Image (cartoon, rainbow, N blue to C red; front, top):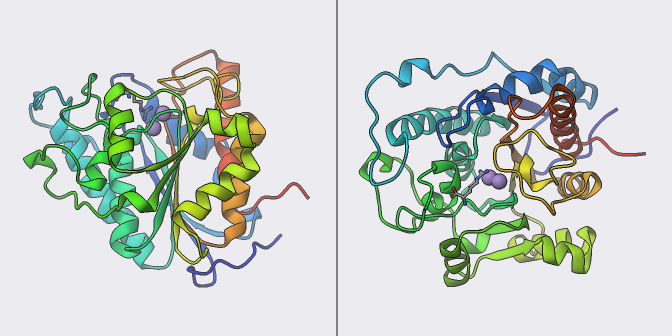
Length: 313
Ligand SMILES: NC(=[NH2+])NCCC[C@H](N)C(=O)O
Ligand SMILES: [Mn+2]
Ligand SMILES: [Mn+2]
């Protein structure tokens, strides 16, 4: 099977898998095992069958980064670790993108998106971001209640909120008009305010119910990519799916996307021919029973395949 044209990638079309066994952006162990499970479930050969060349030189090792003491800064937890891991992943993702490869980053927790978006936007400055998640992950230093940095990467990329010296490497490369959310249903009060103040387009589960997923994806693309000519970065948090579909994740929220709605988003973005980077985040194989873990990992792989060209017919 061969995949349709992609406007930004040279042939042979190559995926660079960036395995990020990292959990420092939130407190639950196990999310660092997500990428290992996804690869062991056969993701690489599944993508090769779709006609991609796949490069993968093993999961990243972050142990050497995590040596010293890392007391909180304000209430931000593991700030030095998260910053340094993300800085190193940003360089890797950016280098793959500059080589004309499509970086597929497997998390790991969603703090890693400050790395992946930095890599994408340093390569494709006018790329738009489609963020599929139950959560907006847009807390600032001032608004976060948890201090978990996986709830904050978007604010860092937008350059909003108080600056933290430790994260001075993060350039605010994302413009609010280039960001759109799908699937939201669990926002902190401060996050709701931030979305309004910055006029950020968001299609919550309410809009998915009201318009249907087909219309929502079209409206989302109209908002950030009206001429369908800009590169797209898709950041998919598996908790966007309903917990009955993807139970093994750290912050499940009921009332989420169905299996088909999640896959439809991925299929529709593939059809644009504009996808340049993909994240699959927050698969935590330590949470839930083994059958639920198997199911979540399998769904993770199939979302990735849909975004990269698998079709039903
Ligand atoms: N990537 C995620 N699963 N994020 C959940 C964030 C939850 C909450 N809003 C927080 O800031 O702590
Ligand atoms: Mn989430
Ligand atoms: Mn998230």
